[in-house]
Image: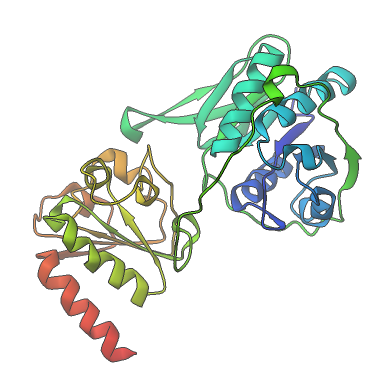
Length: 322
């Protein structure tokens, strides 16, 4: 039996749907002709055109209740939809802070397991998921058994977001109902990290630094190179763990997955954990003084040299070019 119906949790970001949400909708419509989206916010109904363009037939609107802390109300609304309309084959959820919160709460409400860290989704008579294991060196497949929908949490950049040109999705209200004590949490304050340039996971050029930089002060070379290339600065887990840069810069299995047009790895040896987060890049450039560094095995272009000499020369060349 093929996949008959899929639901996708889509996250609103500044009046639009997040890139990962569009990726999930694109993949969902390739597997099923019956795709529904679930979203929230004060103007969630205004997202119907975009949801339909990427494959949704119906947009379930949880409303403004989920604006601040969507976890409890969205999970409650989905559970109510399952009870009233029947369960889809699977519910796809982005790997984000809100997405993971929704997945955990929904798992408790439906008494169904969650498959996480998913990077592939296939139709083999039903939903089959793919997961990288052992640092990304192997891929395993999994599927759900028993009654009820499968809850699948998918990593960003696992699929390409492509418009299907569909008409706007029909909008239906999906009230959350009584949340009880789970709805009592409130946000007292929030902070947005200051950032210039594109988001790391959306940049067409990513320049990442590793322990080969030597010390935290040298990360400025990465930031300046990324700025001159109109890209984003990334990092390996090693220098994030060392406290040189914030976790938001980390590329890898436990960080962000990126698929830019150009990825420049500077002073990164190429641990499997890092490579699983960037090996899908279209063009990979590696700069490392060790000619046997594993990163060269997946690089399209390699420079065997000291990053402290190569990057300043590259920066000067970029400045001269204007």
